[in-house]
Length: 199
Image (cartoon, rainbow, N blue to C red; front, side, top):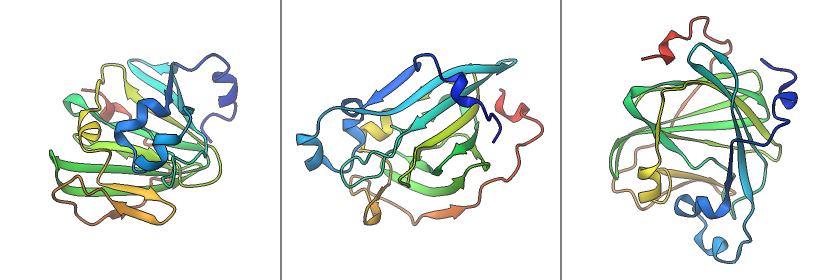
């Protein structure tokens, strides 16, 4: 674990609390949502430490199901080709990334990671994080403070190309073209040089 005392860093109130109502447009289980009470899906603390213009954030995703779907982040795309470096501090994660134009997806990659693993989010992809376990997921990321995010594609097509559910991976039928999932292994060590995160 990169920061053993990460819980000391998240003593303050989170900078972002994403609740269920804010997730409505990207959920798989619309029937469940109609009668579900609002609750907090995940929490983000931004800039808990810095390296120049690189910001270190911490995200916590509790293991509370979204109906039949496992908990996830809302998902977005980094503008201007920025990349991101993520590590799992506690729990497990699926890091999901897709490339394409509108509802035609050209490629999908999923990295399954556990505590101590590292993942690079490539440029120009729409991506999200899934907590596929019954334990809390705690992760951290390095990202340029100049990076801005666009949430519009997942909002338009009700989420990513696939949902991860109690029944496994399910295709999102709102897309016209969906390729097969390609699974990749995480990095076991942190890259020594983080300059690839800068533009």
